[in-house]
Image (tube, rainbow, N blue to C red; front, side, top):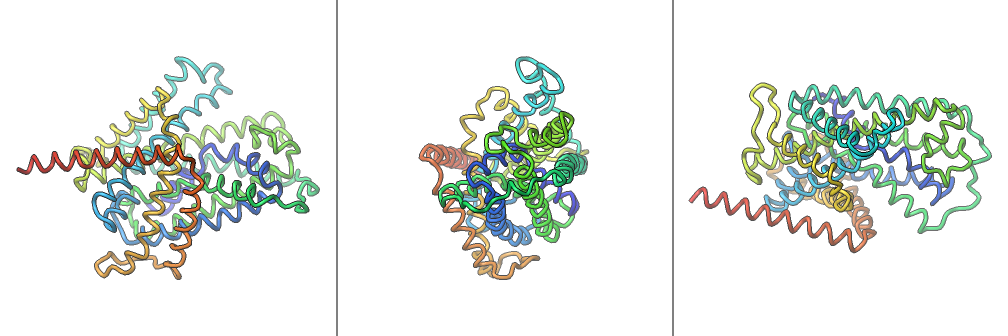
Length: 420
């Protein structure tokens, strides 16, 4: 994969279905200051992204946060980070894949329920699994196409909407309260996650150490620009924004008519497809990396003789994703997705100063000015986000970590027995 392939993965990883419903929720919390909330959130998330950029520039293998944690803290903590990354990917896949038939129902009535829904989900998973087995180049090309496909409707929405903005709707006279504004920023942080999917398949990139830092920054800058402009258009064109359930579609109807809603709905479908594609790519590469380093059975590191892809990890990952999506079990696990990501973010940001002090650590191709301070601020931000989790979310994450430790111990015992 080349630099722009990695940029495409960042865009597909971050932009899912959330932005199509997010503007109304943020506006309800912060009003016109929701634009400021986007800027504050972008500044906060950039600290985490910059930390990832430096740490990623030290490594050329696959695994992303798992690889960084394993090399920094040791095999057991590395396994837990990898396990949480995998959990986050499969639960996100279940959530987004279950939405796809619902949106397709607009074009094909009846597609959102019953047997047609199950058939659509199964077909999607099998098709994406086949793409991933055929080769990473094929997946990267599909990712690039879907990234462009999701940005075009959004660009059309923004460019057309800018001509219909009512300036009087932008009032900064009344500022939101601290609690409401911080809630808006917190909600937005979750919408900015997913960029880390680009670093996971690093072993299949042409120059991961050189390309990943710039790909992360270019991809996230693109996301921020689109998010801010979308919010501006929604505020300026939709008087009922605070109560809208489908803000982009409703705004599009307001200044483009019914055809505008169709374009936005098509954009949602494409956006979800792009997100699902990179979820499979990143999730399968996590357990491949873990199998490659002996933290999971070696069969998961098996490479297809012709396509040179980790076929066993792809098939296992997609099988679990299919079962979870069809059964609806992912719903009970969905709260793990966000907290799991935050834990892995914390591990990567904390690795930056440790790797800087370690003489034997791989050299950083991208050395961030003030990196230690930036990483420290990022850690404080992540702790603040974690402190906002509910007791149930903390409990579920603790259970997931305990289950991961059990699996790790079980595997290590089996390895020890086979050696003796």
